[in-house]
Amino acid sequence: MNPAKRRTVIAGNWKMNFTPAQAKEFIKNVTPLVAGKDNCDIIFCAPYVTIAAAMEAAEGTNIKIGAENVHFAPKGAYTGEVSAEMLRAIGVEYVIVGHSERRQYFAETDETVNLRTKAALAAGMKVILCLGEVKEERLAGITDEVVGMQTKLDLAGITAEELKNVIIAYEPVWAIGTGLTATPEQAQETCAVIRKVVAGLYGEEVAEGVTIQYGGSMNDANAAELLAKPDVDGGLIGGASLVPEKFAAIVEAAQ
Image (cartoon, rainbow, N blue to C red):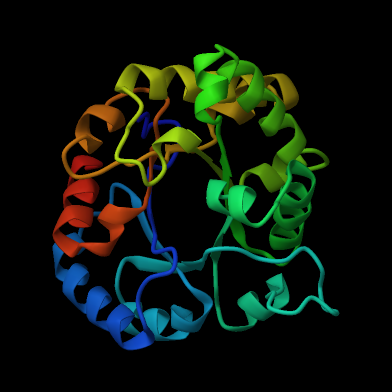
């Protein structure tokens, strides 16, 4: 982390977990554990049906509630999708775009990720933009090329001013839900590559202000070591974001 240059962000991605009642109970339990931990932004991205309940429970706390995805069209015949305007109408401030599970299971591409990012930014939301390589790409030694190309495609047409509302989450696909984690050195190396690509697009000063999270199985046991790296500015947390004590330990590590 480099808190002198950019904000640290610890965000939980609940994925397909929690009913509205369970979300309220979770927020109730985690709130006292993270109260006063103001050296980082704390966000939980929730399934659509739990957002309102989670926001109600988080009111008056230092916890923000976000969404896990957004469609790129303002309206239309997109059964099952939710627009940026709909999310903003209920007060959603943050949204995850391009998560590896969306890319893997729901055929999202860099093109649609770029469109979703633009739609969210146009609606006044902050985007947690996910990118990362699969195992075969890591083993082939082309991680830098893959994440570099993703960064360029996903940010195509986005201005430096808009980039102020984009958080980039590096999530090696081989470490999502597998229990595997990039070493702190691997995480630092790839986050630094992403920052270098951003610098090439927008300049060094802009790149130094961009928060880049690590999102591959960060948990209470490895968070401190990962967050100690200069280009790892937080975490996008999966499984550990479902357990108040584990998530709170990650927030503590960010202090």
